[in-house]
Image (cartoon, rainbow over all chains, first blue to last red):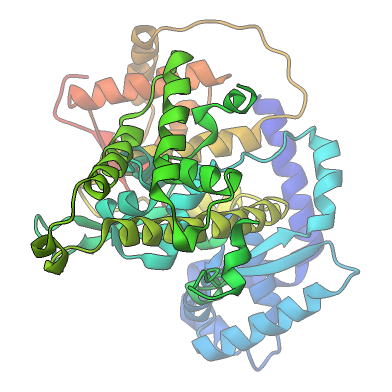
Length: 223
Length: 245
């Protein structure tokens, strides 16, 4: 195991040197002296390259515009503009990676067309699925949140206790204070992890709920 | 009896079953015939119990409501009750709930396809060097709940999964929690004052051993030999407690 670990680390560093050679010293400098070097990052025209490198280093944890801005000592707006540029560049068909911004966290992702090949390479199982119960509960919390357990149960007609615990443990939802209703029940809302899992920048991007009003069109609903 | 081949597991609850029946019997949701629905619902639940399936209590609650509504309809109308607008008409309430549930059921399918799309985009864990450079958290005691611990645990398991070589051969060796606890205690001598949970896992070869380590650590925490904290990055930190080493 340890032998293999070493090998992986070596490969990792090789890749690092190949792709991010230019800013490797920059990063070390940043570690030691945060403020001094980076002030010129934007003028030097390196800021975008540094952001690219940071995206690589932060991996699946990702990085927010605030974190990146603080690290480069530039404004959040400047950072967002640079990330936008980068994202556009990576949209190009010739690239196998893309940058996702889900819930305000930027991440490097391999493009969807890479997945089939990665599956072959790693003999991956198909991705774990979410149960209908989990999806419905998440949908209710996403659209109606902050929402209490009782409100969720009223909509689904079944108990939600266990499902809420599972979703809490998977970091898909979190408690967000208490309702003013009698007994001050706990309110739930969705998390950044939910946004990440559903490719959402913000809750505004949720698809519109289907409307079943009392009109002629919707009468065809069950045909 | 063909239609009863569908089992109750296929439904997400009583409302889902009702929507299924409405669709199957071609009932009009906006002019709902509660009598037909109730009869079908009962037929269905009876078939369920004939098959010795445990009919969840939630189905019974909705059945009670349906029967209550039906029985009220059978009784001669009392005008005073008609004028009593205190409560929403149970039928309107049922239709409203069915419509609302239908909304979320449909949107769940959309969300599911979004979820599956996201699953096709792969990421890599944060650079190992970054984790090594990280300064230990000095926030003192963390009064987290068991779910924080579960989340952190899940993350560790995921990392282990990712670090696993593609082809492995290993012989299964069982280790009890007690044995592992002794090993962990032995490790404590050469570990710094505060250390990461991962530092205890360097000799873990498989998931059972991983679990044994986790249980051993929980036991040590119980004995106050170890104190754990979880920082905002879901990293579990340990330090020595007041208990016996």
